[in-house]
Image 1 (cartoon, helix red, strand yellow):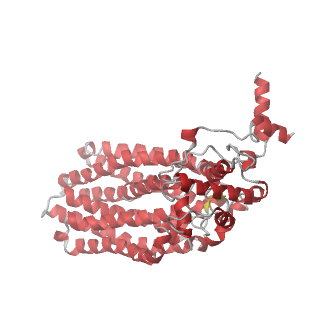
Image 2 (cartoon, rainbow, N blue to C red):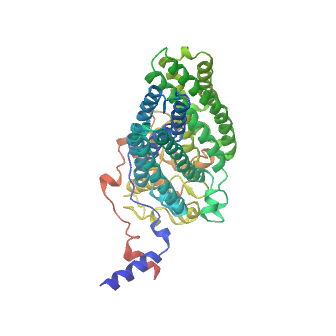
Image 3 (cartoon, rainbow, N blue to C red):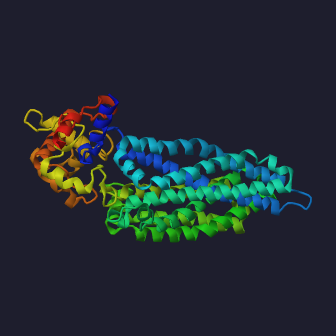
Length: 500
């Protein structure tokens, strides 16, 4: 029995992987699958960068200032130290709750919505991710030690200096975690020569890695400085010398990092491939947003400038810094970081991994097979393999689920019906023949969309399904609601028969 099962597994594993090209499709028709990932990822990055990578060195530096500016008989300025501790408490609570949940949420949502892409990334970056997890565990241990031993470290100068050293180690490990992950994020935008020389080193040292790291590092420091200024106005009593001193220190921090962040943004932008920068306006907003796209450049400048103006004001007129004055620069700083993160999530269309895997999770190298022999015949999870007049709507539904549903919905955000209604007229009945002719060529006009992977017959079925959605208001349910049906051509017995 054991030998028979082992033999069967060996046979299955030796089969060409193209037979198993997709996974059961998890789908949220009201939201949009990629939007789910983007929302979680943007929140996580703003917390990770602003309250971990940038905030930890700022807090450690401020703690160190308390020791340096203390009296001869003091270990540290206890009033200063207690207020810096309260600032750290805010960051500790947010990073260990919302930050941790969104970090896990990224893995969970990507595994549901984009399993093929995350599987490919794990294969390429397995050892990098392994190291990153070791660094991350160390970071968690360090932040627990740093926060929980803060009060007890004030018993002696030696203990306090050791505590500060833990803060600097925490800062370093937080940055290393980001530095490793950035290589994976930039790889998804431009793998460089990895497509010809498939190795971890080639993947890690992709063309966008250093430019993106140069942008993210100072931007994290800038966001942390703006957020830190907000906390200073909350935890330091108005009109006191200690508050004025804190405002000036944080202001100098912002003045240091703001111009470096702007320089990093310019270098990062110039490193992005031209094909992606051409899609930038759509990545930032929608097709309707194109005419306002140039305003986003001013938004970036204003985001940095608002923090810089606040910092200059803090150096020369520290008494003027109030919570309501700081609020706007803080929002602009986080918005600036979130804007770039949204662009990174969307700008790499039509790919999810540049030059390798399209955003519909189909490999670019497999397209000739799908376009010649049909998408449904090569799909693992489909209820239709041969299109007939009777099952055309159902066939189109399967094509839409495989080729379109990663980015589009039937009736929710980025509805495919709304996309075509904008082309042919809102409220007008969609013409099936026009859509069927347009679908195979849509990539030529909308380069941010992957080429259609199916045959002409499948494009006609898809057009019929889209018209049916318009008529009936039908909603596309995912595998989590409808269950899974394996294609009759792709079950184990059929595949083994083909192989023989």
